[in-house]
Amino acid sequence: VQLQASGGGLVQPGGSLRLSCVAPGIGRNFYTIAWYRQTPRATRESVAALTSRGNTNYLSSVEGRFTISGDNTNNTVTATLQMTNLKPEDTAVYYCNAYTGGRNYWGQGTLVTVSS
Image 1 (cartoon, rainbow, N blue to C red):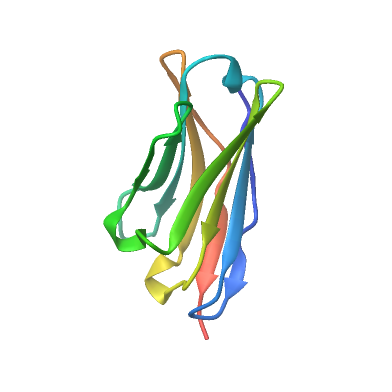
Image 2 (image 1 turned 45 degrees about the vertical axis):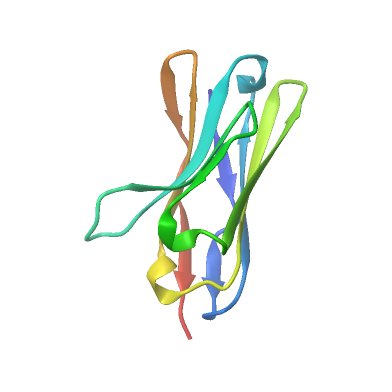
């Protein structure tokens, strides 16, 4: 499964960005699709996750600011991470992840920079 992530960029504090991840073929089975982020000085952390049953989970520091949603069309899942009220500490490389059929898949990272 090749995940395609997009949507990063530069935004001022308080601004918004939307990330998208397209995961072809995973929609036919149970899956979890998630966004992780990583900075040079930290380990990769899960930011938001969505299961095929519609359950969501968020990192406490993004709760209320980030929203993950998903669309399953013809077994291709598109996961969107809407990020609002962005803070400088949200600056990181964001990675899309899908877990299905006992396997983990990663997309390429997309850089989000929050700076004035």
